[in-house]
Length: 152
Image (tube, rainbow, N blue to C red; front, side, top):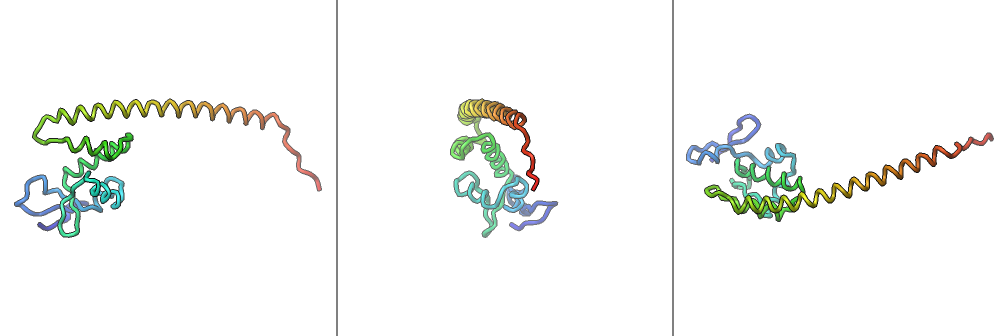
């Protein structure tokens, strides 16, 4: 299989491969596209979250791997651990109804929403306290006479 440049992406040119393999992108292209480092992609691969194809030392990402990366990044954005993300991704069955995966995802999402709501409440309280403190300090500064520079 050889890679050819199509637009901004390198894609595989091998008619014997299935349709999903025709849009393979190199690791650098994927890193740029999703704003992650090469190290991040390799780390996700080491943790079993991504399994890019290999051609020699070149990592090639299919549409499936890109979709998995999008889900990983979304999961991280909303605060899921990589372990949670992996559990949810590993339950995916392209030929099944994925009921178990969907239930687990909903369960983990409800728990994470509760955690985030508590965090937001704590942040709102901290903002209120900080604002009140800043107002008090500002008033104290406003009430004090401004020191006059000594003539000297």
